[in-house]
Length: 345
Image (tube, rainbow, N blue to C red; front, side, top):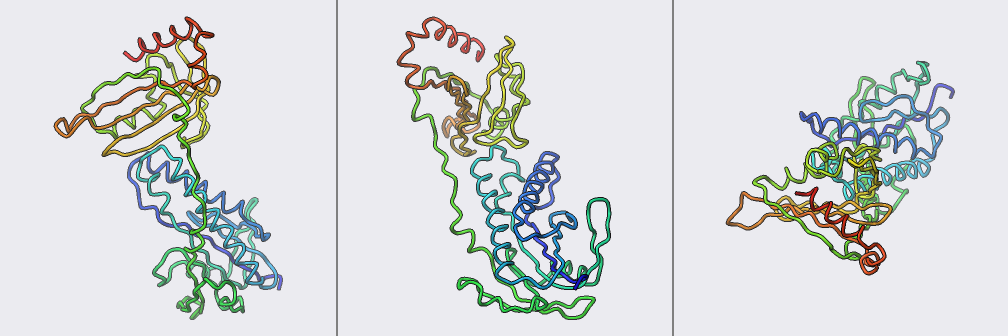
């Protein structure tokens, strides 16, 4: 059995073709994160042959594995995949098509047992053989849904005994090697008990000490884009020279970044809230890690009469205990506020 083994292919689908450069870049990053996550979720001693676009070809030489072992591997990858997407969807800031559609990505898994031979190419073992071709041809089939586990008859097991909730169907596909019979079951129910992250708006623990607003004849999406994209901040914020040390390629709630001020001083910040509603009110806030000061930007429609105008408000919040003990801070506190008002204007 030295040339026989398991072929295991998780395949991601759901992204459409993007033409916008930002969307292409963001979709690539999200797929890369998901592929790395699937590799890290490997608990069955599978080897990686190669990453094939949005899929990974895993393999393992030896006798056919027990179906229960395979199920646990499929379940772990599937849950990890959707846990990441749910978390990203709840914490994302970017509103490009790639980022807002990421939560709809799907995962299917093909498992097939057969003969193949490794061909060593640098640190990877490229697989060649008839059954490798068969496994890849099974990725294209007549199954209507996009999230399923496909098991070929070569694994010689009865999958119907695995879990009561799994509804198994049978089908076959004509390949270059003849008709291949397989069973498949939908994996969607595994998403039902994946918890959504709870994000608490911390402004309820603070007191507003300053509010500045201005009207703009632009869409909320434009205002939001200008505020949340750090590379534009120095163009309109008189106090900030640049923003660097951005913790993530796609910043989200909880991610950190650094404000480099015109005075030469620096402030470590983190994104503390984000609510996006292009037809109503959009909220974005940043909090200073050291003194817990929060700056909150709110963009909203003014009224129906002025339907083409939008207003952005800049609120500054301080923790209650800082505000209540401002006499300790004295004039420096007031000077800081005056300076900030001057910069805003």
